[in-house]
Image 1 (cartoon, rainbow, N blue to C red):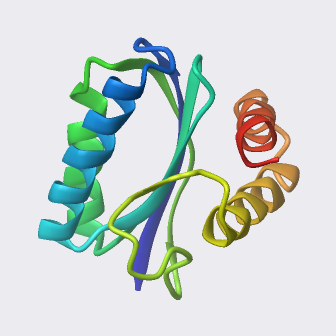
Image 2: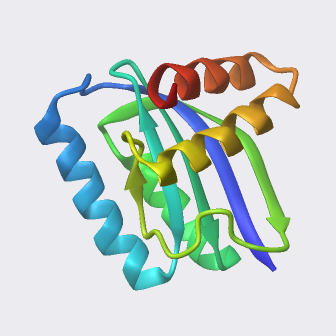
Length: 132
């Protein structure tokens, strides 16, 4: 089984390219080491992220995320075991203008539409703003 976590948080770095590059670089390095995959959406004021992998590795990754000072107000929307990975072998991808991003955004929007919470509405707005 694979553990998947989906969360939203408030960005403390805005959309500055250096900050996003640093997040992506450290995420790829860590996630490759512990075999966690996922995707990150950032609209300048919020982050939305999906991480997945072995339960212990995802838990450790989430512990790292919780202590990261580049964001605050983390809200978990999903933390469950699933049958397979949604994000294949992507140690971490930042949503951009490509087919993989379209696939990831469609997944996130579909998930958010099925939830009836304020955090899910925020997730939906972030995904649509970034992934179109």
